[in-house]
Image 1 (cartoon, rainbow, N blue to C red):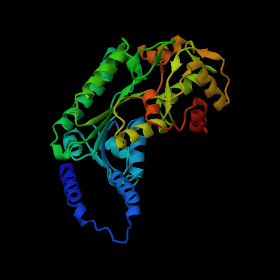
Image 2: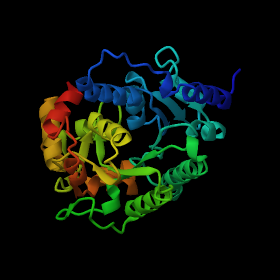
Image 3: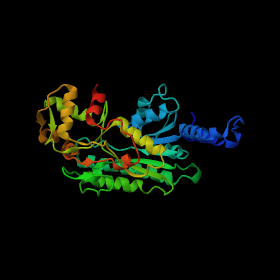
Image 4: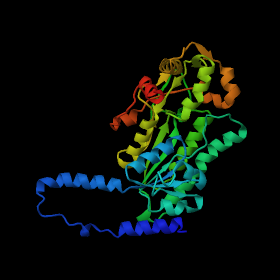
Length: 350
């Protein structure tokens, strides 16, 4: 069986063998076609982008890989479990996707145009000391490995873009403050995790364009926060979780995938970018909207003790919130498909 390294080398050799001198442009093209031709060529170049993705089997990663594959980009899935990744991305449905375990990550990253780093243990689980350690290490170890492999790549085959996930937990929690990309970090456990996570990504070489996406609570079908919330919501007649006054900085799955995609292709996307919808809501409003969409009442709160019984210290993810605005994304002109939570929930639950 052909190795990952051989396959990657063959692909790179084939790609690099095509020179611009072999492309003959007929003389019948007039000068006024030049601008359009240049646009078309730029579009064709993005079609040939090669992207390595960690965390590809996760909630966001799966949708991102689907989008990249649908748009004819070459995708390299960097995973710790080839068998699990193959179940999620079967050859019949995803022909051409390369799946690589850790020993082959180097060969995949070398020659990729970009790397998307989404790896990390989900935080919406019961936190024990062991789980808290794994939450941090799963992010920092993979990010460190990816950065080292990028930095160690020879200049000709080094990726030029790194899009690395982080989270709005960076800001800590508050019921009164408003946070954007210029706000300082908080002082709780998740803020500490995010600071170290981002600091690791920032070690990428300066000629690599780095976009750090601080992701909010992602709403989508078949996973993410809603999969955790709906059973509790149904059990307690659809009321708010905890006080209901905590802020809920959310984003629809399609929008976060589109934001990452834009960060891959648009050179203006660099530095910290908040991955949240422009209209965060208090959790009471979120639950009311959820109740309306589901045709359920929304009056009996889910008590703090119920969440803590399920999630332990991890309940702080839901009970403590922050109001985060996507200032940078809006400055960059990013268009949100779902700026209002009501519309997002209708689409997801219809």
